[in-house]
Image 1 (cartoon, helix red, strand yellow):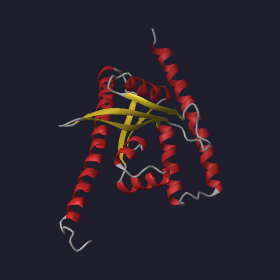
Image 2 (cartoon, rainbow, N blue to C red):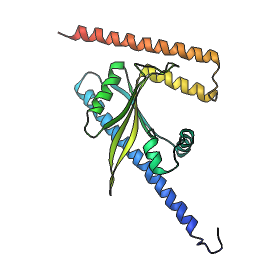
Image 3 (cartoon, rainbow, N blue to C red):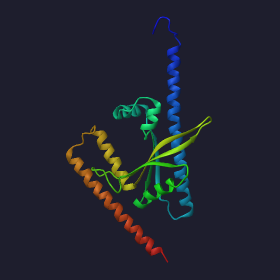
Image 4 (cartoon, rainbow, N blue to C red):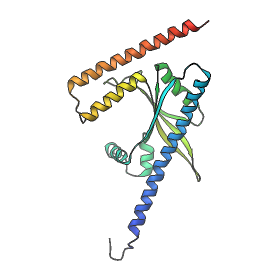
Amino acid sequence: MRPDADPDELPRRIRELQRELTRFLMTYQFGIDELLTKVNILREEFEQTHDHSPIEHVRSRLKSMDSLVQKVLRTGCEPTLPAIRERIRDVAGVRVTTSFVSDAYWVVRMLSRQPDVEVVEVRDYIAHPKPNGYRSLHVIVRIPVFLSDRTEHVYVELQVRTIAMDFWASTEHQLYYKYDREVPPHLLGELEDAARVAADLDRRMGRLRDELRDLSTP
């Protein structure tokens, strides 16, 4: 610090930066809250009016500051809030778990029909699984957040998958974490085989549900 510099300037700048970062993450949390409200309304509607709800579990997460910094560095994103807001689209995330594959598509279809939900990108890893067997629907949506002085539109990543897909993905994540991403080849083979088993289970369960529907149809 220069001898003639204001000794209070640096603390003021740090406090201002903290406020900006807090406000930045706060809008994403509000985006999560908005999407969760929509998902929970669909869930409660079906629980009240139908014999089952397509939605089994709902979870959300907001990237930590450390995780966000790592992604900025990894992707080469300009380290400014406007650039991060536009390029990093998974700061906020909501995960919906369903019983059946058809329910996963139903959830995305119902949400995408709502006028204030803008679907920006869809990655269908159910129809086109990743090479390691990962399956899920990834949808980037833009949600309006109504603040006291303005309206912010924030990106939220929606992941929709069946219980079998979610169990597989959780196990894979734990293995990669435990082995620091250097998973032994024999375990990778087990994961690939488990992915095939999970996909077959989803197909079988879907057929069973179709049989039950046919039996209950007058």
